[in-house]
Image (tube, rainbow, N blue to C red; front, side, top):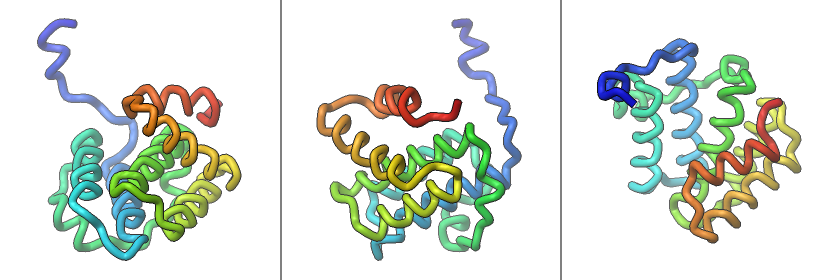
Length: 148
């Protein structure tokens, strides 16, 4: 790959407010068990960097707003958001019932069936215990659960 292409800024089809809503949903998941630890915060920060969020990250965290999931309902981002939320549930080492409930509710609002969301989370746990990297787990899950 040419060096110039490696450092070229990625163009997103999704507008900035759409990407911010994605990150704000991750913050809501992190807070759903009553606290957000440093690992969860850093995971969300990495996602925000990947999405090239251009607003003050800490300001976004402190000023969460109610977000309509209609804005996040595209199949492309829906699966990615559900995967990131499922992965975030595991960052602190355990899945809280409130986190799982929020994940299932979000998944159904994004068009996934509740049993599939639960199965996705359990698959991530299983594959993570096997030591697979997130990208490999995501590829496997896309084959099973991803958008058509």
